[in-house]
Length: 120
Image (cartoon, rainbow, N blue to C red):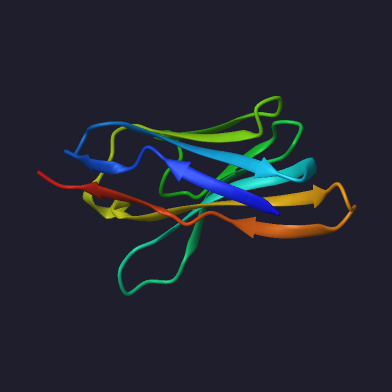
């Protein structure tokens, strides 16, 4: 079994910062690409940022220059540093990872989501 657990969400004022974490645990042989997605009420889930095992990153245009994705392969943990937050960043943020288990089964896994609310 593999689990992804997000943390770090909350309520923040516009212009503020938050740091999300996603810890992967279980029968993990190797983690490949990881990413953060978000879903606002009434909208489809969208990719916010992604990072390869080697550290290559991509960002949605809406967060470029404000968000930074990173990972610690030794700790099986993914991070998202969010600065200069805007009201439109309000959403449930989900962690995603491509993981191969010790049984050499490769699959996509999702966390349960963490709420980020940007409001004054």
